[in-house]
Length: 336
Image 1: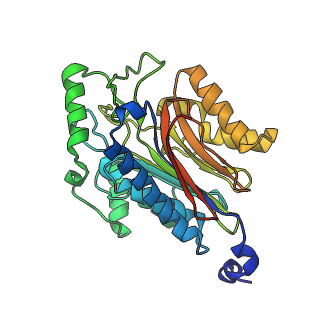
Image 2: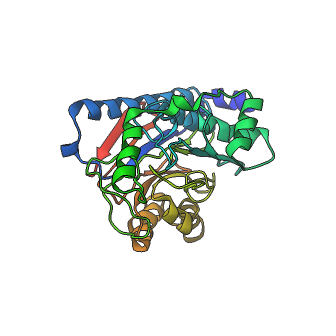
Image 3: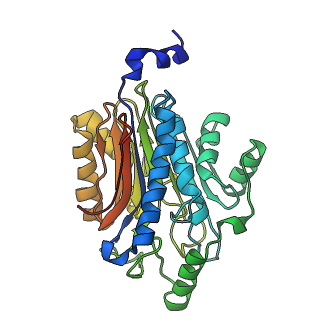
């Protein structure tokens, strides 16, 4: 029986499938949110969930679903990825992304690109159309052009809100960074770990399809006022992005340096594989214990091979949502 035939069989039509997404974690408080902006975020998250669900419900792959969901968020100026990316210290939008296939453990990533409209699609091209896992900078952009991906003028990524955030930082705290736009506008001093009032704008998606395959995708614009050449966890397989059919698929959002040091995404998978933890228990250990102990914060989304999901975060909120086989989309923003 071919893969296509298997997908059309009645028993597989009844198989479990689901999609989970995030659009960033941090100090996200209802008292700081206007009704209009809250609705805009809810609508954007709903659109991302629907894009992935449309694929999964028709027997499509988890890879296609996570890419489609992330592309919706990359195309929205609300999130720090693609169109809504923040500016570096030099006034440039530098984009990172990664994707991973849980069935084969194949993975692709790009970092520090400035002209690729949808970085997650470029990451997938690296995975499927090259012999490499990661490409960066001008080399990644050349590869994307050669593979026919959509290339845009860097001005495409310019939004006034992000530009104004950079100017404010340059004027008031030129040596500090900010993890996406923040209602309380407290700055991040990378030499002083601890609590921050900030929002991490990384976006991501994880999915399980009707064939039991898992996939993960993450995309980000990094930190406002970040220094030259900085790359966070989103593009690093095992740190911010990971998928393995034997365990789970994970996408992280947070202060990347800490997620890199703890290899958060792979560590969740390892706890499940070697200690038989549930996806919730393993995710909670990393996000509620290990990351804060080291001085970082953020969150993650995860789905295991049976369709169980986890969405832990140790900040005041996280843009997040999920949709399962019944087609009912659930979107959440604040701490419950």
